[in-house]
Amino acid sequence: MDLKNTKRKLKSDLSQMGDLSKNRNMDEMLHSELEKIRTKSDDELKSQKKMLADMHSNELKILRDQFETLKEQNDKYEHKLRSRENQYDDLMSDYRVIRSKLENECHELRSEIKIKSFELERLNL
Image (cartoon, rainbow, N blue to C red; front, side, top):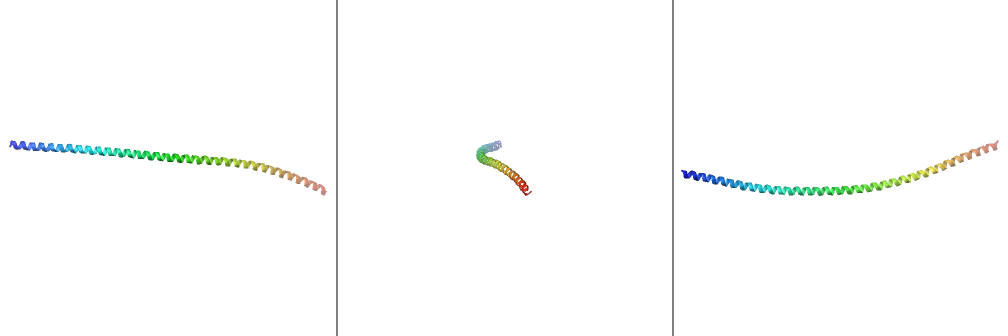
């Protein structure tokens, strides 16, 4: 009976050792798989960060180009505006000169009419 108990105990111990060995193998396998997953996710994260940085860089370049284009257009339109304002000022100056001349001429003609009118009146008397 002692032999049977010893045999059972040894079988039990052997079974537990097998279970421990299986558990260790399972732990090692899980650890290995976790490490593979961690490595893969790190690589994917790096890839996504690089892609995002490239997209950001491209968008920034596009925005800078658009800004430069808009700035050039703005400068062009401001130059046109100044040119038109100068033309307007010149025209207004010409208008004032012509208007002044016409007013003077009208004034002279009225004066002449008055004089002629007085002369006509004097002749009629």
